[in-house]
Every structure is written in C-alpha cells, then in structure tokens.
Image 1 (cartoon, rainbow, N blue to C red):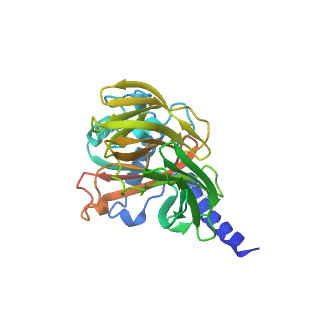
Image 2 (tube, helix red, strand yellow; image 1 turned 120 degrees about the vertical axis):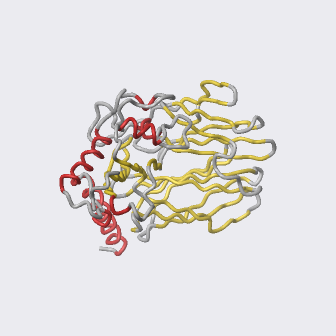
Image 3 (tube, rainbow, N blue to C red; image 1 turned 90 degrees about the horizontal axis):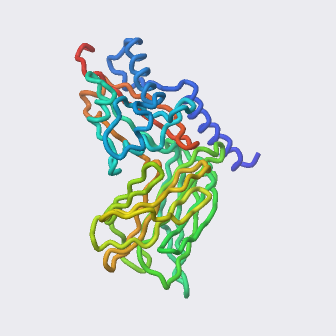
Length: 358
C-alpha cells in the first residue's frame, strides 16, 4: 500500500474512533476534571442533565424562531427528530453575536437550575488554518497562493477542499484535497482592475465521513489596505431562514449578499428594510453543509466584506470555569450532535454550587 494511503487509513481510523466513542458512549466524563466528585449517582445526575439539554426541544418547542423572549423550558433538540439532532435556530440563539440571542441568565432560568452552573460549547469537528504564502502580480490579474491545514485535535485529517475567493461580484472557485500531512496549497485570482477587501472562504469535508464539514475565512486587501475586523460595519443576524443585516453607520452601502455551501453559491434576495436594517431570505437547501452568509459593500470610500455561519457556530455560552479553585468540581461531557445533517462537537461543562464535596 502506498505511504499516502497508509496515512489516510490511519487518519480516518482515528477520526472514526473519536466519533464512535462519542456516539456509542454518548458522553465521556473527563477524569482529570472530576476532582472530588466520586459519587456515581452524582455523575449520573450530571449526565442526565446534559442529555436533557440535547434531547429535549424545550417549551415552546419552536422557541428558536422567536426574535424576543426566552423559553419557559430550555432544550436544543429539533422537534420530532432523531436523538442528538439539534435545532439550528435554537443553537444560533446561543451565540452572543446574534441580535436575537438569549443570555446566560435567561438560559439558567429556563433550565430551572438554582444549584448548578453550566457552560455550553458547540463547534465544528475539524479545525482549518489558512495562511497566505505568496502574491503573484501579473499583467491583468493577481494570483494569491494560500496554505490550508485541516486537523482534528492536532491530528492531520485527509479532507476534500472547496473554496471561494470573493471581491464584490467577482467569485473565483476552486477544489482540492489535502495531502498526507493534512495540508493543501490553493490558488485564487482577482483581476487587477478591482480593488478593495477580498475574502477567501474555505470548506473542508473529511474523506472518511462526508457529513463532517468545517469552514474558515481569511480577509485581505486587494490593491487596498488591510481590512477592518469583522462586525465593524455590519452585524449579521441569521434566524428562521432570514438574514437580518444591521448597519453600524448611516454611510454604509450594501452591494451584494450571498450564501455559500460546500457545493453551491447563490445571491440572496432582499425581503425587506426597516431603518438601518436590511433583511434577506435564506434559501432552504437540502445539501448537508454549513451555510456561510457573506455581505459586502462600502462605507464612504472604504470597502468591506462581512460573513457569518448559519447555524451561527462556533459558540460558547455560560459560566467561566477558568478559575482553578472551581476546576475540581467540574464535570465535562462531550457529544457528537447533528445539525442540518452535519456533525458537530458539543461540550457541556457543569458544576454543582453546593459545598458538600469536601
């Protein structure tokens, strides 16, 4: 067997083991974080508590589509779904960057937990890093070369790659795959007649499991200065198949709005305006892929491009367990969850506030 095939086999085996362990065992208690929690009944209580969050739709069961208020009872499950299939809108409302998000106090109130603190994290299973390695300025266009690396917990993961290089209405698509080290060199070109903020959008799909997908973006200036940080000019708030775009300044002008998936890209259709906000309808797609929503335009003479994912991941909400004095009372449980037919990792950390552990 060629060495590259051997590397792919072992990398895929590691990925399958990681996922199978989480799906079969459902939750893994991190022994290093158990501290003095040696009571099996107490461990079962924590496990039952976290599984309730992931298996229960909450009340009302469609609270994820609500733009105001919070649920009477908290749960992230998609109603009438398979186990560990989460509602993309409920997940999105946990992201503090979304204008329609619930806060931690509302979450704990809906859970009805007076003696427990919790932290919920949901993230893609793969990590993608992007770096620009060269810029080749030609007579009519500039070719940019990027290096991407795909890993899972530091382990290189063989993946199929799909990407888009975007500036205004110019979209350059490419396909590739990582080598045995989990890296890939990719090229994208932009005409020299254009200038402004460009964005490279990268999707990675694990070769051994097609519904393991991740994404990352990289912004840079083409014939212009480096761009401002994300959310400088716009706030992007996806919910209930609608993208609400809130302008940070009255001088902001939106030029284009897109949705990108692993295989497709579409223009978004404007569905309404109100003051400093514009709304776009997000299409219902059957493809198993995260959606990346991209909006570009100008603020005076400065161009910008903003993007967000739908569901709006990664996210983390809850108590800060970084305090070393509290770490011994934490139970951390990991799950593989399904959101829109894509697998993600959910980590839920819990800590009982009672002082009867010593």
